[in-house]
Length: 240
Ligand code: UDP
Image 1 (cartoon, helix red, strand yellow):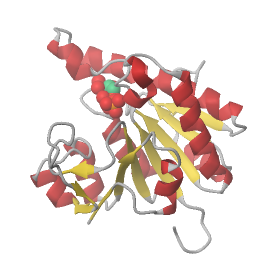
Image 2 (tube, rainbow, N blue to C red; image 1 turned 90 degrees about the vertical axis):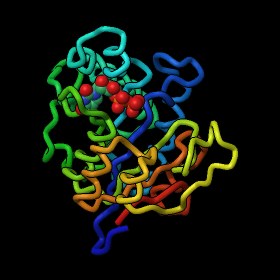
Image 3 (cartoon, rainbow, N blue to C red; image 1 turned 30 degrees about the vertical axis):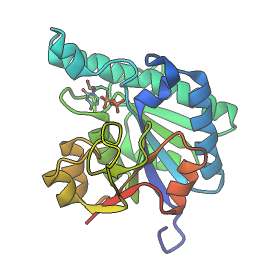
Image 4 (spheres, rainbow, N blue to C red; image 1 turned 45 degrees about the vertical axis):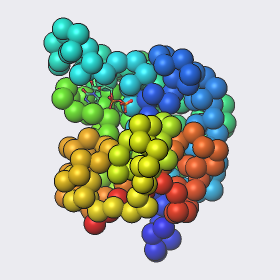
């Protein structure tokens, strides 16, 4: 937590896949409701939260490219998919009595504000959750990289990377290797040289170059968002 009385501010990255629940595609309202409840709980305690949601439950550009589509066009589809997740989260935050704003990197005035960094900061200061949609608006990037970039631009203390079904960073894939070992802490360099699954490399180098710590944790475990915000020892912390 910062000194000088400023409330803590975090960029929370939510896995798009988690939003699908068991269904694999689309949005499971029960999961989104659960996310909204957990975010609402920390916002009520005074923590400022900005959110980036992935879009893997709808489209991933690289996957569509492998099936013959133009990469840039399929990346735009991916970005548009994230916006549906944003609107779903906004809806459930509203039901929790928490004000929020969706800001998108691709202008779509009827459903969201445009991305305006200073206005986003103003919303956060007023206790509103800001949900960033449509990634960075640029093909060939990811929502992990968006989370790092937005986190830096709004001066977040850390990037909280909520993962679907894995509780931190392991030395090998825990789904395939029962002897996989989880790291409590790592430095950026190790993540990059060992190609560990924290985020894509663009996101990790952006965090490294600008000293933004990353906490990788399991998103769907009850209370984990609050634990992450409080700095409890969950998941894997990546920093210098
Ligand atoms: N995307 C993009 N530029 C961005 C952010 C996202 O092109 O700045 C596209 C990209 O095709 C990506 C898709 O949106 O595959 C969905 O995002 P992502 O794969 O990061 O979602 P996640 O895997 O985190 O659910």
